[in-house]
Length: 169
Image (cartoon, rainbow, N blue to C red; front, side, top):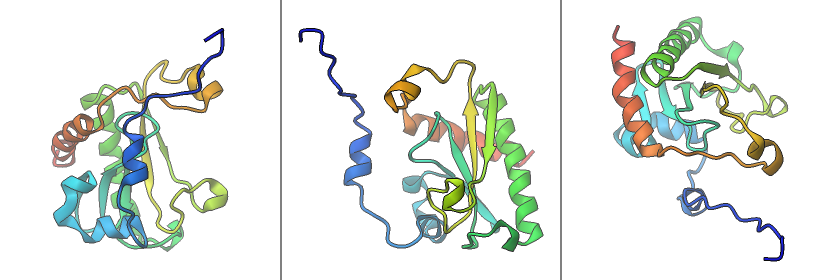
C-alpha cells in the first residue's frame, strides 16, 4: 500500500438503507397506522396518543423516538394532553435507558423545522439518545463516521422487553 490509507469502512447495515423499500408519504404516519407491523417497524410501545420507535439510523445504540399519532410539524399545535403524555413517556424512557440499558446520560431533543436540523420535518418527534462516558471519539470528528458496535435487533428486543415494565410502574 505504500503508506496510502484506504478510505473504506465496513458497514453492512448500510445496504439495508440503500435497498430497503421506500415508504411513500410520511414515514411516521405509516408507522402510526400500521400497528400490525410493529415488530418489522421496530416499534417499542404504542398507545392512544403516541408511539415509541427505534431510530433506524441512530446516533448511539438504543436511540429511540417518541412520536404523536397526530401528523403535525408544530409543537404548539399539539394538545396539552398529548404533550404531557409525551413528556411522561420521556421520563420513563430516560429511566429505561439509565437503569435498564446502563446509559450514563441521555440527550433529549426535538428539531422543529429544517432550519433547526429536522430530518423528517413534517411530523414532530422527540429523540432520546443514550450516552456513555467516552462514546465520542476521533472517528466522528475526523472521518465524519459513526461506529455502531452493537447489534440493532438485539438492542430493539431488549428495549421492547424493558419499556413496558417501566411504563406500567
